[in-house]
Length: 97
Image (tube, rainbow, N blue to C red; front, side, top):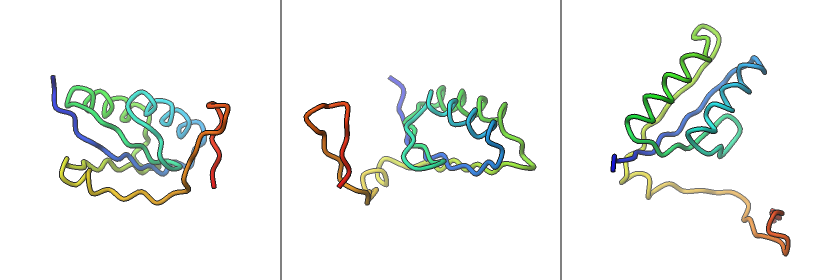
């Protein structure tokens, strides 16, 4: 099995259509954790596929995108500060405190 590495993808795209297209493409590779921020766990083959998909959507002179590789040692040190989520009786609903 290929080794997976964590990547954080952060983007700033002013065009709504391109931003939505990129967001939908990144859903194939990771999880949105903030507006315009994705966490992705990818092997090299999937990383290359993601990079190719990104290049087809971005306009380099207008759009900004960064991909940060997070090593395994650093990944365990990630701190998350957000409202606690708990499931209600209906498991489809999440209540934020």
